[in-house]
Length: 164
Image (cartoon, rainbow, N blue to C red; front, side):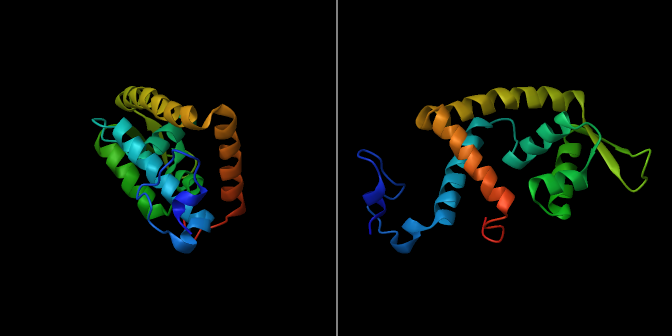
């Protein structure tokens, strides 16, 4: 089975004509390929800002949840504490966030955006909007919204946690 056999007329794969064998029917494979395509476009959109998808997500979560903890961020993004600590350390090192000890729990650090972090997030949001518009243009609003619903269901069900 050729990967191009399931595509609409005029659509091509990254490696047109390559036989993907059983991969062609695997949901996880196509999720990973879609994720890679989105990541490439996102990286181009963020050129010059030196922000990754995860860093943007962390800044957005901090903006929406002032005084959030690293642990809460790690849980929300489905990552381990060490990875989150590295992301937060990088953002802190760039002066984009502020850390302070919680008044309720001395072991907990509360995070908020610095003024520089707020400005950078504002610029990133503009670029993210253009990035999202490219995908919506290709899929249309109804399909994009339906895809988001389906992806949320995958995440909620924990399907593929060990694969994705």
